[in-house]
Amino acid sequence: MTHVWNGSYGRGGKLNKEFCAASVTSPGVWSSHQCSRKVAVQEEGHGWCRQHAPSAQKKRDEAREAKYQAEQRENNARWAKQAAFANVAQIAIDHFDQKASFDDLEAAVAKYRELKEKHRNEV
Image 1 (cartoon, rainbow, N blue to C red):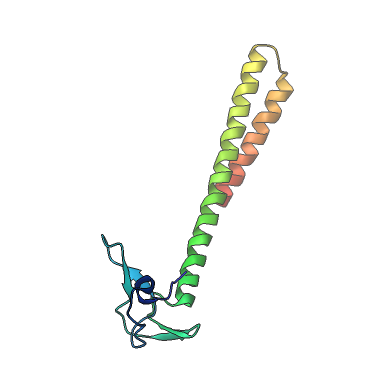
Image 2: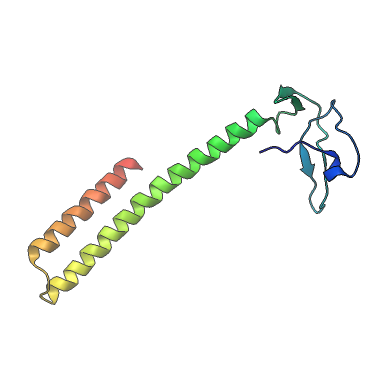
């Protein structure tokens, strides 16, 4: 969200309407100042440069969220596959210790292969 410059938190100065209305900071500086770029877009009652325009920020936020959701889907598929593999390994150990049947092992391997193939098709 873009903040409108308000005179450095009420310490004086007025919004210069020839420049972008965004309140920005410089590296290593604690106080804010008005963006030094010329107005390119009028939105929400203020003039903005192309970087700080609310519509541009919304577009960047949506792209960032879409990328995050895609990464989450990929991670969830990978974790499900890893959990299925761990389940196969545990059932194999249980089968060796005679705590699980061969059918249990076969079902777990089939589930793992199914998840592996599904993940391969998604990526």
